[in-house]
Image (tube, rainbow, N blue to C red; front, side, top):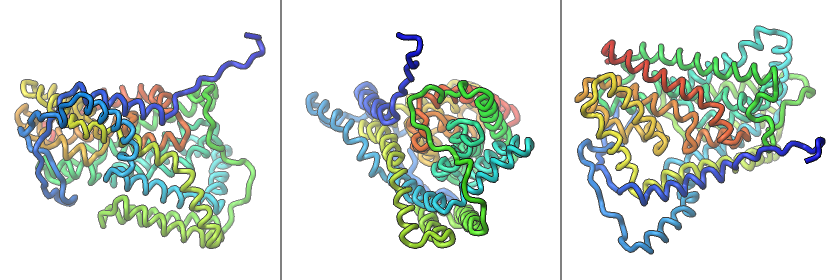
Length: 481
């Protein structure tokens, strides 16, 4: 090769290709793992509502549907190609997909007003003038998102914030990974170490028969530690990339980056301030609705649709301008919606093969003879493994806690500690598993390939897993209840 020839750029596998490959592997797994199922009952969880939970001790192996080998092969191949559409219309994924599209439209209206760019230019200018502000930007934003994850289970809501934080990170001399990590890892830290999240802690405690949101002080301490670790990791990476752009895992990848914030542009005006005030009031309404009225995906999406109309009016876009910006945002989020459907399709294939309960039963059955400290860490490991197959906080709680709560009694672990093992096992791996629709949606929007993200975040994952073992050891030692 001539000396002046350009260095070939590494082409990371497309996220769609990765997810389709995992769907194929899931289909193969249904041929290896025997089918089985638990009986299920519906119970009322205080403050949360009705949940379908498994009945401990009810697992039974079942016969595969259709004994003809040829028919099974045809069915498996068909499921591989049906998985994306089934993932789209799945009762858990469909609302998230609609939510992402509608909220993406609302954020596009916000962006079209020019208020965000004008405000971010002020932030960048302030950071350039003030080393203190420059130092505090990342910790402050991560803390805000982490609090959202800890208090009301902020998760899917972080996806559209990537549209704001990636351009900001690029303008500050960081990379797209930093921009995606601020909202996503921030909320992820809070979600994993939540102390008031009704969708994880509330559901798990209700099923385990533990007083709702008890053990608060211990969890608040855990939240502070986890948030500090995540913040330190992101800041270390950001500073490293700013000093040397070639140290970024994104450097040299054949990936079209998201646009950076324009250094030049319109000055911040009173109208921009009014737009941002309206948006802030909308966020206050969101938090209030979630905490006091039980809002979830449908209500939050409706709020953002209404907010889009308000922002368009306040921002002077007019009816046609608002509609045009909204639909442009929906179009921009369409690939992300496809990624979410594909990620959900993995679980659809496993459920069709009736192997999820078999995997859970196999993992849980070995706990009986373990001591309390070992058993608590083993529960954490089991919850971590199950999260790959069931990347839903409330869904995983309903699936595992009816088994883990009585198992905890048998091995001398408090049910409160079993809940703690669940929430960390569920939360930490949400930051890396490709079956998480939220993670894959964030990466698709930020244009960060999943293998690149996985290599980058692996040291943090190892550290968080080690922290989880230490925390559970302490919980057992102090009799956390």
